[in-house]
Length: 306
Image (tube, rainbow, N blue to C red; front, side, top):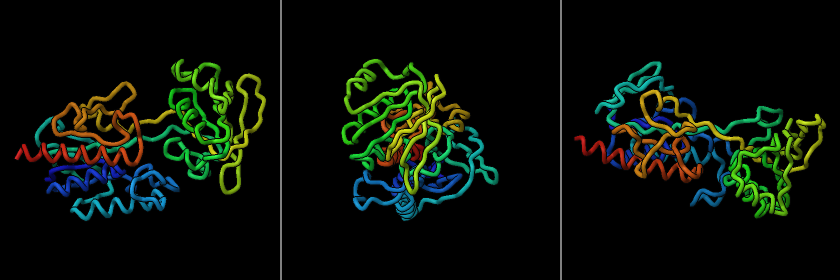
């Protein structure tokens, strides 16, 4: 029997484990892959408060894991298959090998960026290719950068990057944008942003880091290239919320878990933190903050039960 089980060991899950442990809770963190979540794949993090030496994502994740374990949190590498009795005071978390009983659950399962699936995308990830302008845009200061996508996020990324990049090229696969007209008008009015419609990226090229984007005109079939030191892929993200939904946790129309300001879901004793929940900003530091709030709420819930 555990007081709190945390599913997912990204920044949200590990900070939740730290706060749960400090709160005197018997805590288990279940992670199917490695600790750190999306941050592990990041070559350099320069916007996490207190780490001005720009650690790699792996270094930051390792420090977080060590810190969480200091307060007694247990970690296990398993894949959760099912949650039973989610609406009961004692809930059961089922993996392939084990069943764990718990009074409270925190879903910190994260989200994954949608990929283009083209040549060079994986090769240059972290070396020119990013899925988050806010996270990595500063690395492209003074350089030309490409933004791929036609929604609000892509347009917001282009405007953000235009503040410090030399030139920003916004590529949309059609003439129709999904972005709101007001934000699209701002993009069109910005002299540092060039919009290309009916254009898709076919591959990414370079030596050690990204140097150019090979593009194709979807209307004419003509191919060309854009020289750029960075490419932000902003075509959406997919929340890892299937498990939560399967046990009755409510999500928004895009599949993100709904919570209140205390990170509580619609089910008593179940909370959510990090990228998997509805939130206006998905960063390592905001995920960690979510974890602190969720764990504190879970600690209070368990204490009220006892």
